[in-house]
Length: 223
Image (tube, rainbow, N blue to C red; front, top):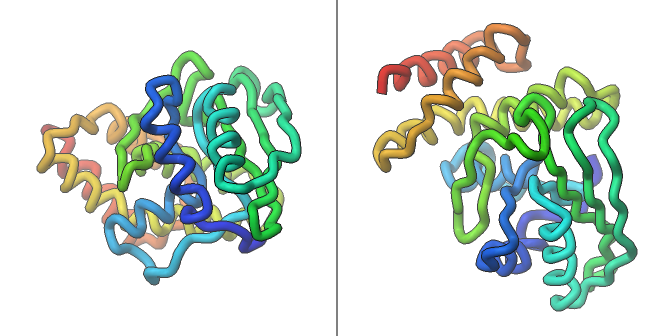
């Protein structure tokens, strides 16, 4: 995958939109995985790169983030609304091509719903956790979404990134569950759903890593 942007390129705009009551969203995709990895000191400590940023939200969110980036000096190259056909029933994607002030070309993509995670735009699942002012989709739901991508992409380079993201999430989730338990955050529904997906679908995790993930999910099952 092209190494174009990091979360730093969007952080100010994302925080600005998060403070707006009308700008509800959660960050998803590789940059969200990178943010969780940084929060729990998982991986090599280097910033996660991506070709763009992905959010789950609405048309309003896509417009708001694009405008916030524009105020920072970015150029908005257009705005496209696309109805998702595969998989069906997941609503629309809103895409704003952006040229950053230093000339890098990227885009903000906002999805109304995520495959395997949500029933559709009116039935989002999972929950957001604010990390350094930016709402991130919980890592269990991110794992489910990334597992769908790993199973369905035809691009080997993107599939390789999905593998890396899943491996990182496999390390992040046990730490996240421990912290959620300490803070009294209810993760029961997400744990059960993720366990169901692990029963149904293969993952790129090593046997030891998969066993560790399962053990963590089951450890908190009765809490």
